[in-house]
Image (cartoon, rainbow over all chains, first blue to last red; front, top):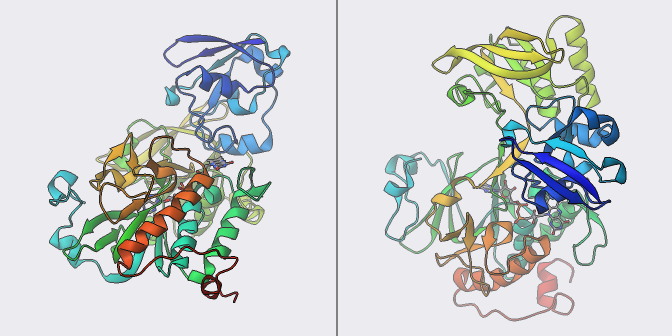
Length: 106
Length: 365
Ligand SMILES: Cc1cc2nc3c(=O)[nH]c(=O)nc-3n(C[C@H](O)[C@H](O)[C@H](O)COP(=O)(O)OP(=O)(O)OC[C@H]3O[C@@H](n4cnc5c(N)ncnc54)[C@H](O)[C@@H]3O)c2cc1C
């Protein structure tokens, strides 16, 4: 298990124990973190699970793949630390990960 | 379109004003109008066709296939019975091939704006393109609703929409001699950059990164124009619009070095892809369940006799939004629709494998 902290736009903090191998999006949806819609169910086809990765965790989560970069073009307020949370897989190395939900999804 | 509360007739269905009726240029008579050409609408053509029912399909997209073709054409689907794996576009192509013997007519790029019941119990269907249909039955296969352009999160953008901010180009002339700001990195953004550049006063193409999803040929042409100083290429995001009474004069942009600029712009075309909105369906007087159309599970008929609803847009206890469920719904709906379209005709239960009459219809016997 790895602890993931989601910070909603209004500042509400959700600490969630996530199983390795699941995605950051799936854990958000299962725990009803507001602003993570995942309309397409995790197929990297909609950009409604957009999050900002905490600067300290950008390296550990890695770079988006080209398909994810293409889909990020459809997200709002994209920053250098923007990711689609359906494309971040939980590993032991991500224990403590912090992600924020953008205002436009608030 | 007038407010629904004023336009409802006694049956609760939407009514058109005399003005709306008089501008309907073309009237098409048919057995069934299918609203939505997604996978479920396409399969309905096949099931209705086996029962000798002819269909016209209307979809706001410029191509058939609904979500499968628009949102995930290249992605694999694993739960279509009989296909261990098939892509969204592959399934769409197969459904089109399967429906081909029944020669459906497609009306693409048009949104169904309203439906009303006529005195003879048939229906009139009208599109936002002023096309009118008269049908004996209607099948609403509108999925997640109509695809509509995504609006960028720029404060106050709604004031400029329709005047200075447009999500599509209907008439190129409306852009002549304007300072045009085009935002996006896909084919629509690039195509309109290239098409409008010769007649614009200036064109700025803005994208969040120096990589484009569009066809490489268009990207090369765009880059050549940018190098020749004939268009401006900017990497960043729009944060605000300035102007008066919906007429834009400047866009405020933040580039990727976090510098704010004011860019002269009197027209803006944002291309951020499509999202699904229920659209006008909510105004048609049908019983809804959380924005989905309530149907029974025998005929998949709505609260209005003769109007059926199948696929993602309908709801009944136990509903699963799966393509295979939509296919089942189409088959049962067709049986019931046949009784509406051809009340005197007896519906025989037959297999496509063994019935020569069905095989004749399919053109294989
Ligand atoms: C990324 C992704 C992956 C998926 N994977 C699967 C899967 O593996 N298996 C599965 O079974 N399902 C899957 N689905 C769901 C599946 O795509 C839907 O269940 C299916 O598309 C529903 O088909 P439909 O024909 O009912 O509606 P849609 O495909 O939504 O088509 C409806 C059409 O109606 C049109 N329309 C709506 N209103 C109007 C109007 N007023 N006027 C004109 N046109 C209108 C729309 O533009 C649209 O083209 C997936 C969905 C997504 C987004």
